[in-house]
Length: 219
Ligand SMILES: CC(C)(COP(=O)(O)OP(=O)(O)OC[C@H]1O[C@@H](n2cnc3c(N)ncnc32)[C@H](O)[C@@H]1OP(=O)(O)O)[C@@H](O)C(=O)NCCC(=O)NCCS
Image (cartoon, rainbow, N blue to C red; front, top):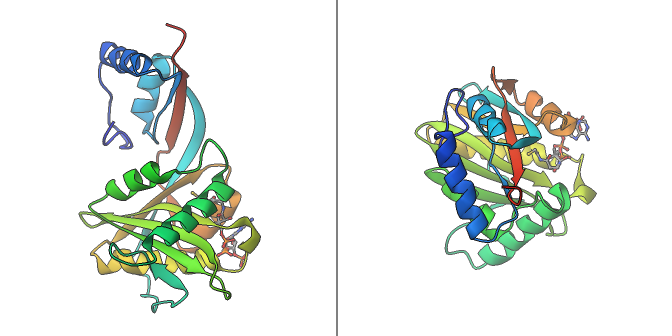
């Protein structure tokens, strides 16, 4: 459902949605979960039997007024040909799993999908004083628009400014790629993330997003 997170993006006709569900059933899936979708798509899917499982605030901030942050040696950019690439990706996935829990954590294909969702993307991993990975951010840029696709700090290392440093580096990376704005979404109940984003000047857009699910066994 490419583009389904737009404010007024609609979805295919109900019979097409039914075809998608039939295909997933044929492939052996027992249930389906959407990505984050906009309000019109959410209504279309609710009419097709989907139920909302996450309400997300969609926030945006102006990057042009933020000063560039100097490079932080304790935040490593994961490069295509780096020898540490595999271990840094594995570390980011571990932090993700410890942060979002079973059922919501990214696996490797999902991380790859998130990276491919924007024209350019950069995964950055923060290292603690002892050199252990402590958190990560995935930033993406498409046509002058920036996105913070994922951000997490290991539960044992929170509240020490790690996310603030990661976000500062992500914004600097986005601004250097010509992005004038950055957009992020987070659960409306995620007070920690909302306070963090507010401190960077993020403000809510007039609409939010939803993640919906539907079992597939009942038709
Ligand atoms: C949200 C998260 C990334 C914050 O990471 P962190 O490294 O602890 O954040 P920082 O130490 O940089 O905190 C910066 C500010 O954010 C806010 N904040 C962070 N954690 C908070 C909490 N538990 N409650 C309230 N405010 C919080 C505060 O304003 C804080 O500033 P302060 O410490 O001076 O009061 C982390 O809690 C996390 O990984 N959560 C799970 C995954 C997640 O929600 N990711 C982001 C949404 S998709």
